[in-house]
Length: 274
Image 1: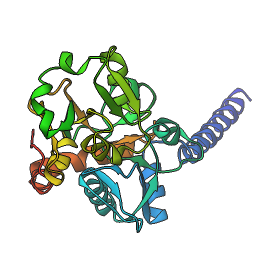
Image 2: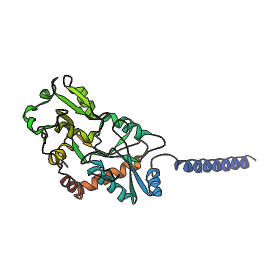
Image 3: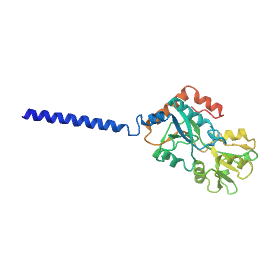
Image 4: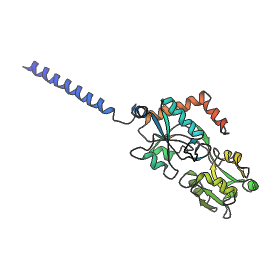
């Protein structure tokens, strides 16, 4: 009897253990991470990419709804390696964090001039950098000798224009306590506002400034080679998508090693730092 009881107990434990393992395995498919994010994207057949579309030459949306730019091409490359199409979803700098964290998700990842910061990494995932970045200024070419340092800008008579909700506004508020700060809603229009005399300085990035200097002869970036900050631009996404993050990082690494990233820097007139 004792042997029979022991055998029955052992059999019950085996059955229960197998059932528990099967239950856990079945539920693993519903846990974010591992293969779930990439599988979902591939089954959908498209990569949903959040982007502001107001940041030449990284992300710009034309009137017909088409997108172009450095970051846009990186997004297309990520989608190509996933074997899917790319669909762009409009976001904005003031709503970027909320849009990334939204449930249900609005997009799989965000791209286009997004600086890697510790604050963002606390609540979201950020890829490795694919573009060196730093704060600088745009001003009228006729006044380029006027601004040789941050101290030259931080004066009551200097009108500094920034777009709302992003790191440019944050930088201006933290470092320009005497200058007159003007918040202008449309980032892509600020360079022309400066050129036309509605503001004296635009706080911008070393990735954006060269484009406007090349396309508008009224503008200059006198401190382009002496940025106020140093950082990198990366891809932003929700936590729980570690498989997608790993794939994006691998894509960026390959683009660096095979020369694709260097070619994009040359195409858009940006300094290659890798």
